[in-house]
Length: 383
Ligand code: MG
Image 1 (cartoon, rainbow, N blue to C red):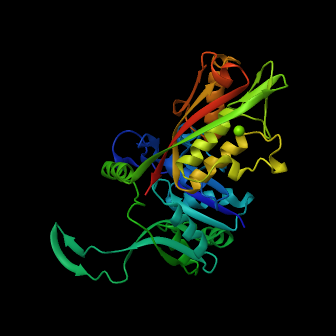
Image 2 (tube, rainbow, N blue to C red; image 1 turned 180 degrees about the horizontal axis):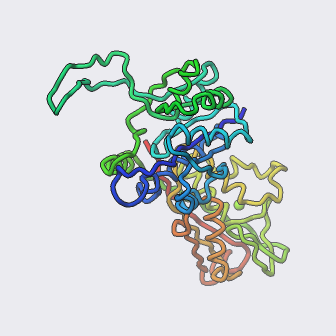
Image 3 (tube, rainbow, N blue to C red; image 1 turned 60 degrees about the vertical axis):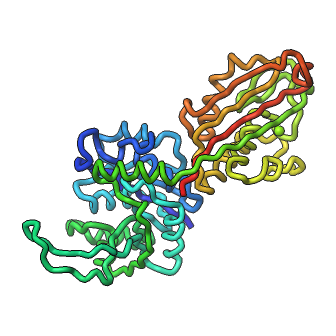
């Protein structure tokens, strides 16, 4: 069964003040929309992510989405939210997923748990709506004068995702053309579908004003925890004419001996990430005795550690690798190594450091019997 996420991001969002559409504003240094896309793209149960964008935002979208997995070509939205969603659903007909989660691009703090529950509820139901029971007293007012109190029993505030079986919601949208309904649950209910409520949380706020952006900043900084892991690896020099270091092939008078490609840099870094999320070590996840890892390219180990980190809710903030050897010379390859690691981890280049040192001819690295690497990884957990 395939699951798609449809991210609605075609609005102009002028209420957030000057500085362009709110979904492209920076939140904790990362565009709001990138956070939203990543929440779905990094979720293990989501297969495809499609964004509906404004035609003027193509460049901003390309910058905000660079390097994220599972993204389909964005599609252009229409005049209203309903039209935009309808266009997004039509664009998904090629993939024809079993389920679709429709989510506001301006709700960047949606949790993995809400996404999982939205998918699970569809097993037994036609639709699912994330919402919160109203707890404040509701009152009608006229000219700022308090009027009657409105009973809040049974009242909920709708959030997103709003989730449906794909074929049913596509059909409902086709039949709702021209009706100008405010959200997809309204479209679904009009078509006779039943929609189950899922209790959401306040953190899943929609950023519509400058105040919302500030609140989201406070939620991010106040609810995160930073952890660091370290890794260390050594491989022995043997016969060969090249070594793999940090994902780059380098000609050398010797090779490195190992079950996989013996890339000490990526091995130390993989262990550092596993350390930061307290999930064992590389040998546990990729046993050296297992024939499927013989000669394996170590970028797979690193990518797997990054995926495990994402599943734990950890965002990799920074990695730092130190290679310890007399030869080969690392300097000429350093930038290529940083670029390769940044590519595997989908990080910006300024978050990837590669350094080198010798041991002044001392010890096994000094005698050029082997090559060592150590690494640090810093990750942030959202709580
Ligand atoms: Mg190793």
